[in-house]
Image (tube, rainbow, N blue to C red; front, side):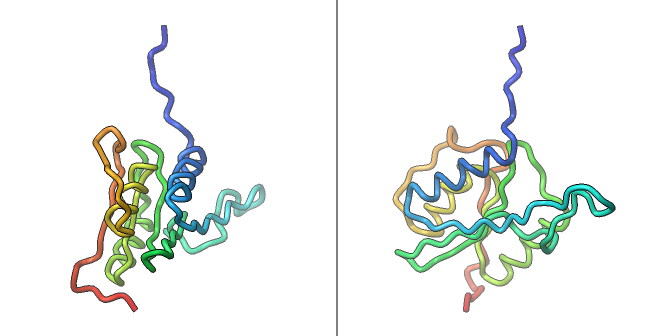
Amino acid sequence: MNTAVRVPFEREVKRAVIATYRRFGAVVANLDQGFRPGGPRHGTTRQTEGLPDLRVFYPPRRVSWDHEVKRPGGKQSPEQVEFEQLLTACGVPYALGGPGAALLALRDVAGVQVQVHAIHLVDGDRLTLPDPGTARP
């Protein structure tokens, strides 16, 4: 009997993340441009390397942040790590992971009254907030 737990595909995690944000009234812009199929540039994207998957807006509080979707145990590329550092240095919060990371962002960036428990989080879910002295334009 196989008792291994299936790890969801990233596209499945992304759908769950977007649904979580929308459930709480956030507006989500999908920045994923897909990849070029076939030919010498097969698998390359049409966007800047490291750009997060989602830009999230929460109009009631006039805040926004970026979210890089990862499946449980997924790792950032070096370009994604660099982009995270750039964003937070410029005052932009950065969520990484699945729906648990979305709940952290809704709570800690948007001020939504939501309880986040360990059961909501999986390996890798986190939120990086900018230094308090970092001003956003």
